[in-house]
Image 1 (cartoon, rainbow, N blue to C red):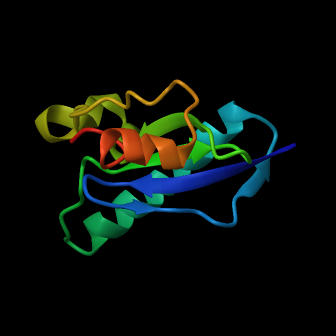
Image 2 (cartoon, rainbow, N blue to C red):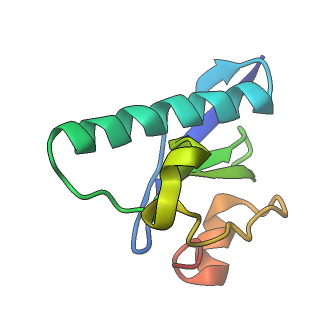
Length: 112
C-alpha cells in the first residue's frame, strides 16, 4: 500500500489534499479520482450549476511528486462528452517534479 494525495488543480488555484489515502497502486488511485470526479460532476448537474471543465485531480505520492492528472471531464463516458466534454487541455507535468516546483515553474501548475 502507498499513500496517494488528490490535489484539485484549476486555472487559477490549487487545493491541496493534506490527508491522502492508502491505495494498492496508481491504477487504483486513478479509479478513485474518476469516481470522485463523477461525484463532483453529478452534484453540479443536480444543482443546475456550471462546472469548470479545466479542473483536474493531480495525483501525487508521499514525496509530493506528481504522478498523474485526471481531468474531471475524464469521468464523463466518451459517448456523452460531445463538444463541451472533450479534453480542452493536457497535463504536461508527467515528469515527476515535486508539486511545489510544478507550480513555481509554470506559474499556475498547468496550462488552461
